[in-house]
Image (cartoon, rainbow over all chains, first blue to last red; front, side, top):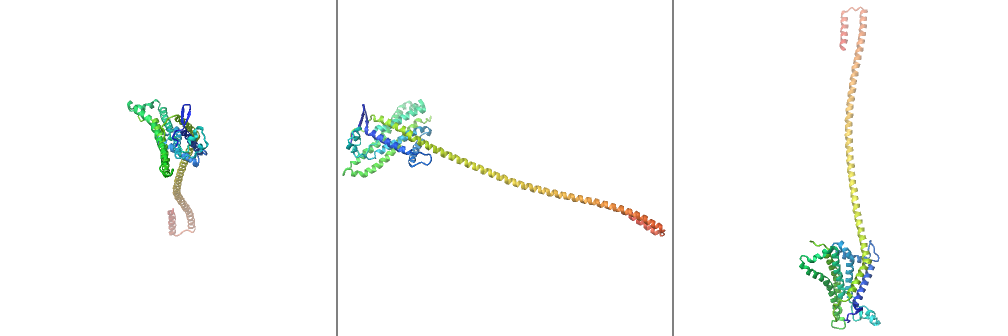
Length: 252
Length: 165
């Protein structure tokens, strides 16, 4: 098993190569999926793919209008839709087997460590969301959105809620503000990372080669799909909720 | 497993940039057009609904007008019938009264005629009686009336003619 994280170096910056490759693959998949979905747009009777896309849009729309004033939330729809798609597709990567069959090892393609990234020993691909960098990136974007939208809608008054109901509470509000992205990032990361670990652990069940793990693996992968969907939903709902907290006028 | 799974490095920044790029791309290429189409459909359905509502209201209006007209027509017919009945009754009464009057007039004129006729007859009779009297007198005088009684008879006769007047 490739235990070492494959790194790309750019100057003295380092990047997790497998994470980035998978992130871009996921983005490409989302792009292809969405572009197929909007290929034959019609306001009349929608096709199958358009139906799926409209279902997703409606789903997120409902989510937004449940949490806040829909007119306020409308500019966010594009972001939230992309977010839920990205997290869901990323989570699904961890249930896709590594289908490169050691191709890169056989051809010794050293470019960007591709042979290391798609090493033969990796039975399953690594989800981008099983890297804390990706989940933290999304969580940071969420909290940046929360604060900037809060300031945009309420002006300086936004900071007023930090001293509610008493200036002493500022420390609690500050912890709350910091905890939001941390919990977002670690929840998603923990769920998906643990899922991948368990996939590897199940292959290690004692017996002939990987055979004893086949049945539990099927069950676990099915459950992983469920977890992936739930986590994508949770991440989006929480982002919406945090933003709605920030932009909705306070009762006082 | 080797190493700490929680290692922050520039992957985070690269992911943020990539993700924002994806957001921008999808907004421009997918969500934007898709939501526009959905909005179009929504407004289309809305306009269809309001149109249907309008048509329903119009139909109701027409129905109400029609019923109103029906009611009016029926009322008018009733009025016409009532008026006609009244007029005819009046007319009948008038005709009756007229005929009564006419009959009265005819009766009166008949009476007048009768009166006149009688007067004429009487005057004629009187004239004739006078003539006859003269004639009788002549005859009596001529035949040298001898019987006094006959003279009384004539007197009586004349008396009677006078009373008839």
